[in-house]
Image (cartoon, rainbow, N blue to C red; front, top):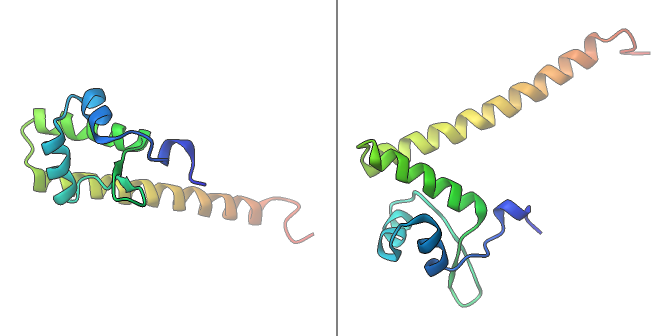
Length: 105
């Protein structure tokens, strides 16, 4: 089971209410690749806490005057940056463990 923050639990009407973004705009964001809600077996969209946070970020960027193509690029770069930071932390741990006084003992 996915972590709680990634589990799609909110329908489109609840998500619209929580974010202040209309259902048609939510569908547009999905078509443009800005958000990817999970789907039930019947095809109903379900949004997660992570989706809500992403929608809040999208709303901020729209308010700042960024167009949807720019928003998609920004979000992709932020995702790549987070992955690289996580990988860097892993590599630092490997280096630390190899340089510890007990390494190789």
